[in-house]
Length: 181
Figure 1 (cartoon, rainbow, N blue to C red):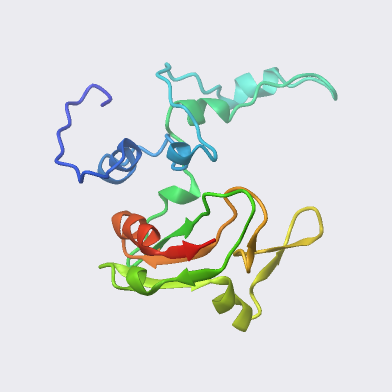
Figure 2: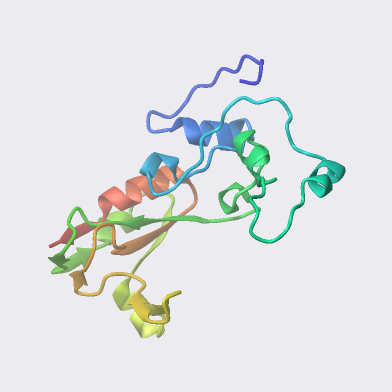
């Protein structure tokens, strides 16, 4: 990696993206790529970030095209994302998502997930409702459910949220949540 030989013993479920981020501190590849929700590709490039004078000389009037100056840092793996933040005692979480685009949620059983080592809590719509946090505003100006409550309305709608100490506990906790549809 970057002209350095690196060797690691990895957990069987450890993805390359986590090795890059957590062991090598290479944060250009975006976590999320593995789920195809969003992502960024990293390519090898020479240092092509323009300096202030180059940017200033290339400025043109309204309506003219402009080269985006931030692209180089993204493609060179020099940018930071929210996923790159690491704090002491920070917890992680991940969502349980349904295998269906539209279904009635009959029951959510979180008991087995709560017994998974590293899992601290599992939240459902019922938990959020008691705190009046079960609906959130959207950019379109309407509201939507934070977690599916009684019915899944679209593909990958979130059904439950597993709070853990690490990524592997999150993956194990998600698998342990049993949802009857």
